Length: 287
Image 1 (cartoon, rainbow, N blue to C red):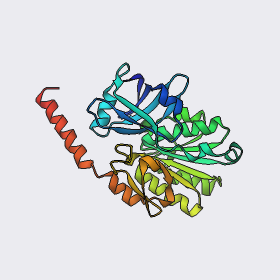
Image 2 (image 1 turned 120 degrees about the vertical axis):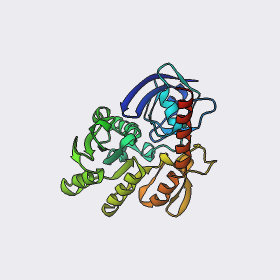
Image 3 (image 1 turned 90 degrees about the horizontal axis):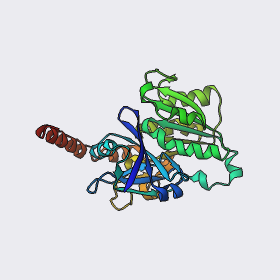
Image 4 (image 1 turned 120 degrees about the horizontal axis):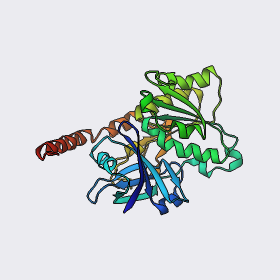
């Protein structure tokens, strides 16, 4: 059992949990993920690591309530425990293996959308600790949906974009990217983008004419996290790869996003049916 030592709400339907998982914390690196189960018979949910503390022996996850399983996870409170918390899994971000002299010459642009802002944080934090400068664009629909802005500002140069203009740049993250690169003339060696699939697609379309290396995280495709189920298949440069064992990070200019978006919606009907069945049972039993 893995105890929840901290829980707090970051935005509507988005919760942060800090989990006591000493062995995972010791081995974790930026870009990796964990498999979480709320109950003995619960679904395996892959969640990208949002932070880790080797001294405290804790790992932070951020979960958005989308389907039944994520609702069960988010319903737990401080002092409760998760049945399973397996990891770290997946390949860490490539920059952790680069020679420091080479790495410190590079300039990174991170583009984070919605709950994808959480897994961007450990990457930017790691780079900051190793003397690498980063610009980070955080995008959300509105001001009240922004997360991790204060934490990110301590380790990077932060730029905000909201669809409705309630904070920062008014418009999509791609518009703010063009502002930084084409108007302000900022130069980057790599762009790292984590967020909704459609956002990552258009970020890659934006960076391609700039010949800017772009890395994306396809963690949203994963189901069981072991490669056995095959549900996270993705076409990258014409090859079939598995997000959980070959990724979750890939060259965004080689990813077939249209196929990935279709695959992401495969279980939407089942999730809807499960939610409706749960609501029906709650009404029947007066919950």
